Amino acid sequence: MGSLIFRKFKQTKGNRENKGREIRRRKREEFTKKGLGLCGKTGRVIAVPLAVFIVDSALNSSEAKAQPPEKPQITEHTRDLCALTSDCTEFPIEPVKKIKLPLYTGYSVFANEGGSSFSADLSWEDYVSAGLGVMWFNPSEPHPFLNVLGTPHFNLWKDYLRMGYIGNVAVSYPGINSTLYTSHGMDISFQYPFHEKFKMGVGTLIQAGFSFPTYDDIYAKWAVGLKINFLKNFEVYSMVLMNFAASKTPKTQWALDYAPRFQGVEVGFSWAYLPTFTASLFANFDVIQPYAGGSITRQIVSIGGWNIYVFGSAGLSSWNSDFFETLNFFIFAGVQIDVDDSHNLATLLSGTNHKFQYENMNLGNTPEFSLKSVSLDAGEVEDARDSLLSSSSFEELLEKYKGKSADEVLLAANYFGKVLGEVGYNYGALEKMEGLELFDPVVEEMVNEDYSDLFEFVKNAVDFYETNGGWSGMPDEIKKGISICGGIHEFLAEFLRQNGLNAYAISVNTANTAHVVTLVFHEGKASIVDYGKRYTAESGSLDEVLRIYMKTKGVPIFNSQVFTKGGVYLGTYTTPEGRVLHKTFGVDVEENMKSIVLKFWK
Image (tube, rainbow, N blue to C red):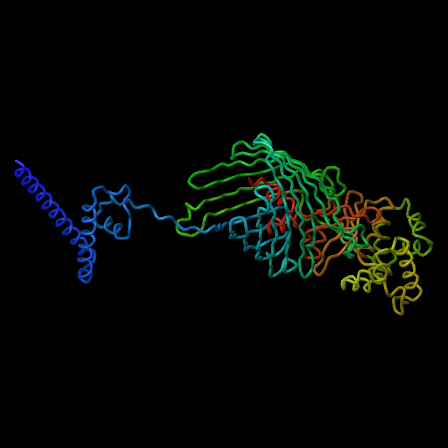
């Protein structure tokens, strides 16, 4: 009985072995046919033995083990076998992951009433970006530019304390006005989650910029802010904005007098409904142009890697302001399109970002204007000349103009400015300051000159001119001058103020250098007095009279520092042209405070 069982077992085993050999033979034939078809004549010498070896190895390996592995080991050979035999049940192939770099491309468009810009952008996450584009100012030729912006930030202490850099280097050729525009700033912020539904953050940013060679965009700003998030969906923030400036007009080119000076306070409240909708209210109590309004951001598309957001805001500006004729209605609007890497299959990019923005802060464009110039020998200045020569002090001169018309007062200011422009400029002191000889007696004497000193100089100069019939043979006390543009135009502004006109000394720029002129509002109009010339807009708007001056000089004005009664610094006005420049280059301090420094990063 035992012998029978053994024979049966041996016979069964032999049948299994014969069956296994038959299966291996068939698979070898099938694999060989496919290999020959794929490899052709030349490849048969290699393909046939290799195919037999692979199949035998795979089959013998499976027979040698009592239990198959839980997860087959996938090798290059088994991948080839799977592909050739079309039998992938034992060898599942995992999809090969696409290699993507953290790079994003896109387009940016920004426009307002002062100009516009377009750029093609390439960015590396939130660290650095480059934009190649063109910028226009109304009216002007296009200015191509290349801008590199860096915004790297690093945690200093866990997720609570963070420090970062915000800055750019831009080159424009042919130049916007300068060839190089650069800005550099540092920020530090701290945030802490006191509760699941309450967290608070504080931060500060200090940033300074300059341009070369005409110095048409020089500024230094400091901002300090606070933000609170409560109930997860609600946020409030406030920030104080300051500009570095001289304390008084005559010291505008004396670096040691520069310090942070108050510009305004901004407050805001926002409510986020899910990640797709945010509404906010805000108010900026700026000393030059206050504004307040509301904004909405809404995600309208989120399909297949496409995310499209629309945003807009509207409100009122320029209330209780001496620099704008009427209360202005402003509007911001824009679209942002983000596309992730699923739509960049043929590239190594992680996605694309596109942003299109439009804003309008003030009404009106470049208006019609009048330009008036005076001559020292013209009969129309006879009254101003006689009033000056017959006065023994600045106060007496002011008294003689009490009750006179605005035109008469403005004509006298132009006349005094003409004299000071021709012989009153103190080039010796200017050279000392540019050479950083700030404590030189010549510099200290100039920055401490007052209205009476300039009155005495003008009177002596006019007396010499009338006596000698010109400037030939001037004595040294006249030849050396008395002040630079800041002090001269502060004297003219004070003369106008003391005679009932609302006047300021303000900084502007020309095609060659920074400059200071006199701004005056009169009879519903606005004028700039620049030595012996007067540019007048038919409306009482700071924007419009600045744009007139830009048009005549052929260059945009980006920032204007304003000095009020007594020559005391009041604040800095960033023009619409300046907003185009700063927002295109990514160095708008107020915007960076809200979107980077005070943003809750976790």
